[in-house]
Image 1 (cartoon, rainbow, N blue to C red):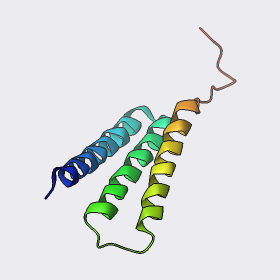
Image 2 (cartoon, one colour):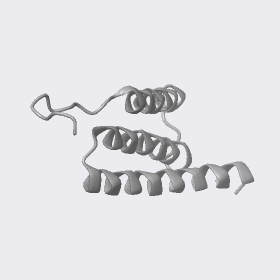
Image 3 (cartoon, rainbow, N blue to C red):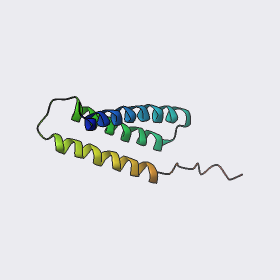
Image 4 (tube, rainbow, N blue to C red):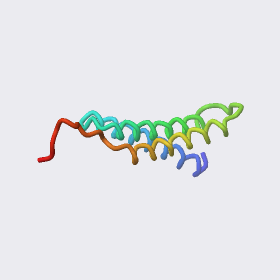
Length: 92
């Protein structure tokens, strides 16, 4: 296998690990942006699976480009989403 393919597979494995870590962090903290980030990492992993492990399919470039776009959108949403404050609680 060529070095580019190996690097792509390594990136996919890393994205899967980051997905798992993000879900674990969400389980501990219950913050919505962590779920959004986890989904973005899942998009990158899915992208790698489509490119490297599945046989070529019609429209593959459109699908992988769409997954990249969705992942970037999810990262943006995770950055701008703010946790809601409970209006009944005052500041200490």
